[in-house]
Image (cartoon, rainbow, N blue to C red):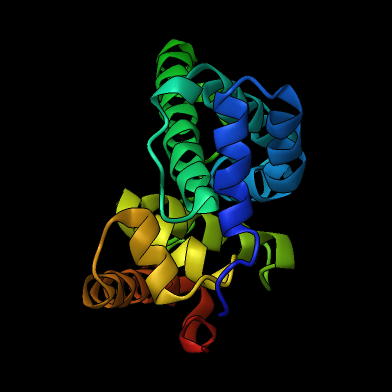
Length: 201
């Protein structure tokens, strides 16, 4: 993938913003808002939560402008912040879900179908497209954070190994290893549901 031709312009805009140019900040938001929302959505799963994460990302950018250190690519820096805030959102959800489940009457709960690796399929045959999407999302959510970020950037954003490495502060061989482990883990988790489909490139 070719380098982002706007990368140098992004850093120039950031420098202008640090100097007090609000228009430069607004330009950065317009330019990268779609990327941030799209990346957040792949973690949190819905538009409303993704937009909340994006709002917090750009609020953090605004508040931390004086502490910004020049990054090799600005979009990668934003993706790193987005990943952290999206993961924080997921952890908050899990804590709330744990408390809520503890208060429920177990006899009134609906059955919980573990999407991958359970050996139990939902009652409807065959799996619908939405269920396949849910299976992949569930498997991605179970990956270690670094593996998940690398696979999302490569497969969904189309970033090359160099750009991923710069964003994650890893060497290209380390990124390759990370992606290999992520793919193997996904294949293992999706095998019970998707079978051979999970191995397709």
